Amino acid sequence: MEAMVRKVQQRVRKAREETDRWDNLNSRLLSQFSNATTIITRLPVLGDAKNYGVLRCVPSIREDLLGKQMESLELIFVLMRETLEEFSGIAKGLSKVLRDTNQMVRGGSTLSAKQLQLQVGVLPTIADCLDGLRTLSDMHQAEYALKSSIISLLTWTSSSSDIAAMRQLLVDQPNIPKDEGKKRNNSTENMVFTNGLI
Image 1 (tube, rainbow, N blue to C red):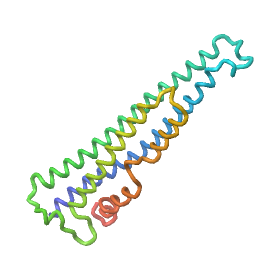
Image 2 (image 1 turned 45 degrees about the vertical axis):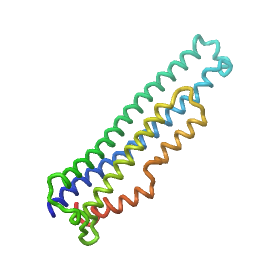
Image 3 (image 1 turned 135 degrees about the horizontal axis):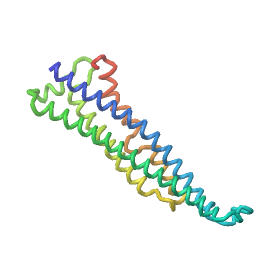
């Protein structure tokens, strides 16, 4: 039983590392999104010839400035797609942690359903850990799908109201509710980490 608990602990540690990486990636994505939307909101101003005043006499200044901004925007779009790939990797990693842990616990072990529910002191049960890993995996899969959809909808023609709504969704991460995250951390991660199991 103790050996099984140790193995489950390793999986929980891996899941925690993945969720820490997720938070860092979300900060990066928000920064990239902000940079992209700054350029997008600037494009109409740069596209209007009357905004150039005396600079209109400079040959092809409007086209050159617009071209440079579009190049920068395309580069940011590429960077955001790369960030999304990293999100996808984390979501897949959490699914693999859950799948491997389930297989280890239910596949080759002789643990009964009662043993899975067995609680020693304040430590979470193996069943609690499995439930928590499943919730973490589901939340991050759904959030990745949302982020991917938002970034695919962002174009150089996006309106300011659309941009504001997209940004709010990226900031809020609605598929990873703060209360649920705290609850899951308490039941599956923090209890394991703070009670010396890992």
